[in-house]
Image 1 (tube, rainbow, N blue to C red):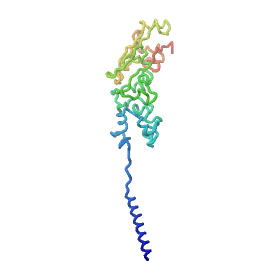
Image 2: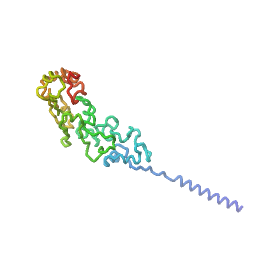
Image 3: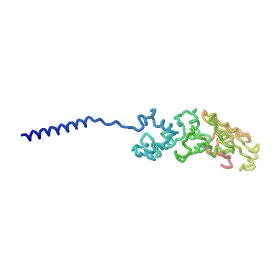
Image 4: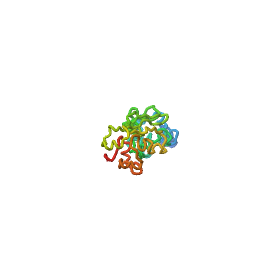
Length: 291
C-alpha cells in the first residue's frame, strides 16, 4: 500500500508539471512582425514611402542591392522588388521609368513625372518633354541623346549626382548650325540650336543644279531666325510655322506657303503642312531633285 501511495503521488506531480507547461505554452503570444524599414515603406502617399527616402539619399539604389541582391530579386532579405504592382521590369528599380517618366509604362521614360513627382508642364523638369520626345509634329520624335548624355545604366558615373536636375548636353542635330547651342537653367531658354532656326545654307555649298541654285537663292546663303524658345511654354505658339525661319527663309526666293510643295515634294503639302516630319529639321534641304 505504501508503494501505491508513493506511485500515485509521483504520478500527480508529473501530471501537474505537464499541465502547467501546457498552460505556459498556450499563454505565449506570437512576437510582432518586425520591419527593417518601418510602416508605410511600400505605401504610396505615406511619409515613409521608400521613394521619399531615396530622394534624401540621392537615389542610392546600391543600398537596396545589399539586401535584395544585385538584380533586386530577393537576396538575403528574401523579398523581391519585382513583385506585381512594384518594379515589374527586368531591371527592377533600376529601370529608367522608376525615377522619371511613366511608372506604369517602361517605354515612357521622359517626364511628365519628374524627379519631384510633378506632371505640370510649367515645371522645369517636365516642360516640353512630351512634345519633343513623343508627340513631335514638325520633325520626327527627338531622341534623349539630342539633349542629354544617356547613361549606359542607372549606376553610370555622372548619371545620379548632386546636381539639381539633368544636365543639358546637346547632340548632333542641335549643333548643325555651327554655333554651340546652350540652355539657360534660369530663363529656361534654348539658344543657338539648329532645331529652332540657327542655320546657314551656303549657296556655294549647295549640291543642287546651278539653274536651281541661281533661281532659288537671293543671296549667298539662306538663314533661319535663330529663335530662342522657352522650355516650359507649350501652348503651340513657339512651334508655329514661321517662328524658326521666315516663310520662306531669309535668302530664299519669295513664295507663298502653299507653293512650298512645288519644290519640297513629299515634305510639305499644298497647304503648308508638314507631311513627312523625318525630312523636316533633319540637317539638310530636301527638294524635288533629291526626292
